Amino acid sequence: MHTLLSAGDLAREPCYTCDPPQLVHVLARPKFERLTAYLCDFSVRSIGIVTDRGFDIDTLLVVEFHRGQVGLSGILTAKVRHRRQLSNGRWFVGCSLSRSLTAEEQLGFRSG
Image (cartoon, rainbow, N blue to C red; front, top):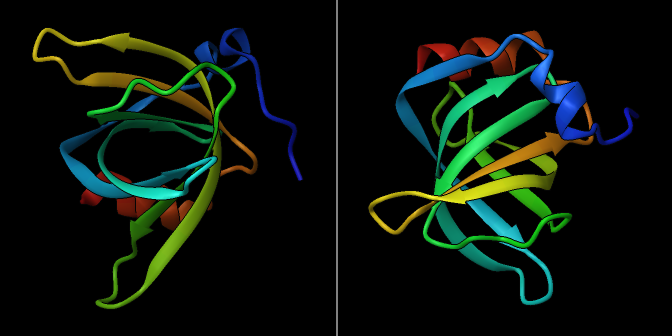
């Protein structure tokens, strides 16, 4: 298992854009309320999502995403590293991942 990286470590990794952004669901402590978010970009060990909620730095998240085949989903564990409020009132949240994305996950995120 990889350690969760610092924002500086994440900035050195190649980043890919999801065009269009992909629908994901996020659960955060303490209530584990399921929230809608959009995956906008990613690297091998980080993701950037847009959501209606600005999570606190260091918040642990569970991110559920749909896989290529109908009915299949994947789960990622992420830690909030930075956030900024967008002009539309939503939040861009940058997260480190607890593990590296697989080649299959990266391809799925790139191809939508």
